[in-house]
Image (cartoon, rainbow, N blue to C red; front, side, top):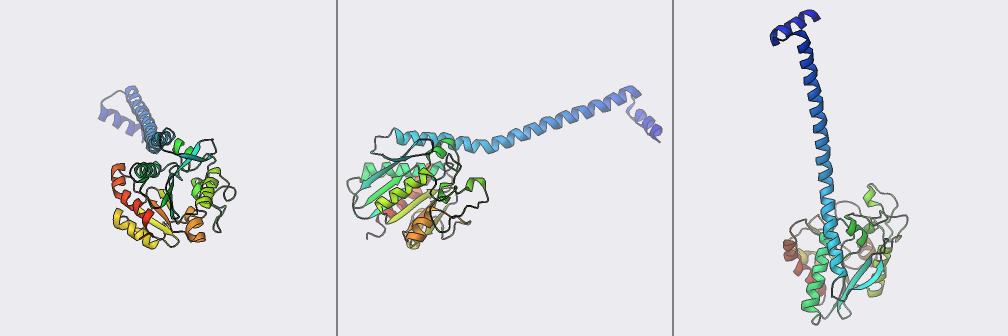
Length: 289
C-alpha cells in the first residue's frame, strides 16, 4: 500500500523519488522555520504591548516629578520616599476650612499627578490672595512608583491599601495590591497621615485613573453629585472591587470626613483639565455657601 501511494505521488508530481523526498523535507523545514519566526514575532508584539504603557507612564512620571522639583512655587517637603525622593506639598490660602488633594498614590497613574500639579499652579497664580479657605495639595504621594511607572512604591506596596483602618487585611489577590506587612508600614503612607493629623481637613480628594467615576466615602454624596454636574462623570459609592486599607476608609468611613476618589478617564489632558478644573474648585468652597 505504501509503495502504491509512493508511486502515485511520484506520478502526480512528476519528480524522481529522491527529489520528492527532498522537496517534502524542504517544505517541512521551511514551514517549521516560519512558524518559529512567527512565534518570536508574536512574543515581541506581546512584550511591546505590555511594556509600551509602562514606558509611557515612566517618561511622563519623571517629567512631572522634575516639574515639581524645579518649580518656583513654594513647595515644601514633608517626607521622603523609600528611595529618598522628596514628597512635596503646597499650602495655598488661609482659614479654618481646609481641603486636601492627593495625586499619584499609584505611580502608574501619572495623569492624577498632572491634574494635581496643574491645579496647584492654577490656584497659586490666580487665587493665592483671594482664597478665604485653605487648600493643601500633595500631587505625588508615590514619587518612586511615578518615576518607575509602577503602581506600587519601591517596596512593592499598594499605598492605597496601607492605611491603619479596621478593614485592613494582609491577604491580597494581585501582587500589585500587596497592602504591606502591617498598616502604615510605608514612609509615603505615614507622610499622608502626618499631614492629615496636622491640617485636620474638612474634605479629602484623592485623584486616580482610569475608571471615570466619582467615588465617595463618608458624608460626601452631595459633594460628589455637584462635582458630577460639572465634569459629567457618574457617581458611585462603590468602586467596583474591595479596597481595604484605603484613604477613603481612613478619612471617610472612620473619621467622617467627606472623601472623594476622583477617577479620571485616560484621555487627552487638556480635556481632563477642562472637565475637572471647576469640579476641583467646587471642593474648596462646597460647604462655605
